[in-house]
Image (cartoon, rainbow, N blue to C red; front, side, top):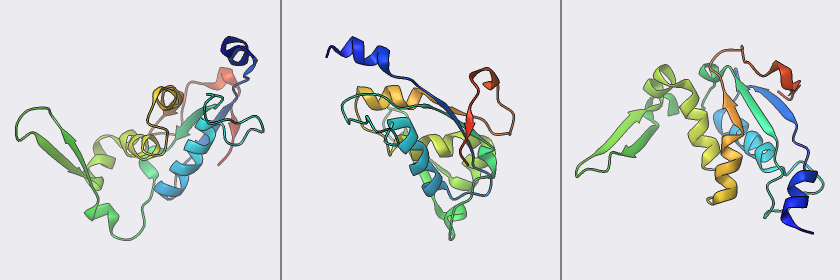
Amino acid sequence: MNAEIIIKMIKRNWYIFDVSGKILGRIASRIAYYLMGKHKSEYAPYVDIGDYVIVTNSKKILVTGNKRNLKEYYRHTGYVGGLKKISFKNLIERYPDRVIRYAVKGMLPKNKLGKRMYLRMKIYSEAVHRHHVNKPKIII
């Protein structure tokens, strides 16, 4: 079959994940599972058949142990000595969506397919979202 025909046959569903009170790593692996399409019977690693995922209440996510104070995220500005770090506690207060973005992105494939899967994830810090028209199914 031609790749264009396969892409037209793919039916993408919408799912809502309410992450309030959930553990970060466990929920991130479930989200990545749905973004990749592994829950479908026609899954193949070289075809992008994943679904859309809406994540709500991202600022209420939990981590186990003392990670809230000790876990740090690093990035580099591109300049000499430009290594920046921010703790989980500060990141969840300033940008609650980025914590989930970083966790899920690390679980997706590191290629063009992974980038397309990543773009189908919509994250909101509150329970309100604007995708009611798509009739999403509630997973968690």
